[in-house]
Image 1 (cartoon, rainbow, N blue to C red):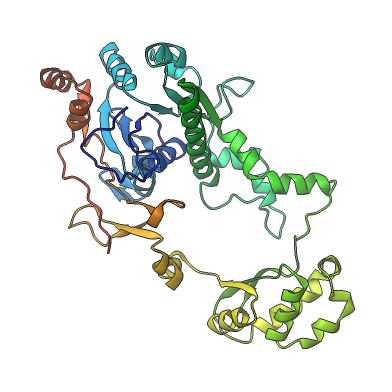
Image 2: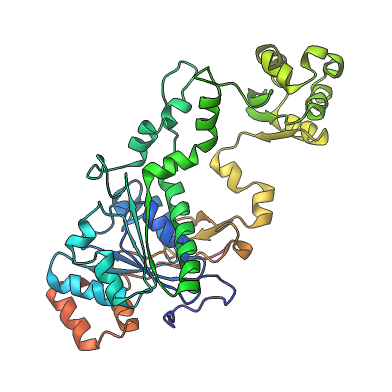
Length: 410
């Protein structure tokens, strides 16, 4: 199906010509939609009158929070009240013209709106319908709400990330939600490839539960291979050490790198110390090795050690804050971030990461405000002008009166 002409896409982008109706909220589903949009798809963000809850979480104004900016870049926003038959009928017409439908409701909600896969596929056989749920569409947890923090607890992730005191710790970002968006985008891509062969769409389900498991494949395997023994590091050294003015992370993957590390920190004798000659042996002496490294690195500044260890071809990096990371010379050279600004009067531009794998990271595209493009989208879906005005007058559709959010590179 042809994408609307409003937003020309570079012909090399893989999803050019694909139309996506994104009814999801929060992080997992919307971030999937943003990945598709930034790779060429025409993604319509459909929200209820009170908006996606991601617009209400954390800092921001006019619904432009870190969550809504980071997960909705590249989309257009349409507000539909689906609580009544007119709104539900409008959604069906939009989905009839779509290639992909995204939702993140609990099992059964879409069917209750008359938008279950079977009914939609009967009208649009090529539709790829992806649903993201907390625990899946069946089983004892089917009706339970899922969230990133809850899944970190249930899946062992908090226990895996325990502090030195043994207390479980949540990973300090919405890791499972973010990863679910990536898994979902991959699943949509696979389903579209399948459709290109068979001509048939598909029903695809991704759960936070499954993602939490898949994301932790290696530590879960390591736990069972260790028969419940305390975790050991994969290699020694592998850790973060204090310097005179900050912290540095140091890793050695091979024996030769460990010996080069010894020379760099003033311990050439490590090359002849048989008890430390292999990684297997070093695992048994991790405490002593780390103590010597800690003592050496504490004597000089981070910048000194980064330069010296790099000169000896030892894996290392300064422990940065976000501002240091964004301003890093390699990050700037690679153009990792795009700089986005919501108009000219809203303060400094904000960094938004590009899409890995897309040439140059891809364009950021527009970041929509709630209900910003309602009229525009309905026109592109060939809804008659008189009907659009009637839907607006009846409150089935809302159109925001706001200045279009802009983005720019600086």
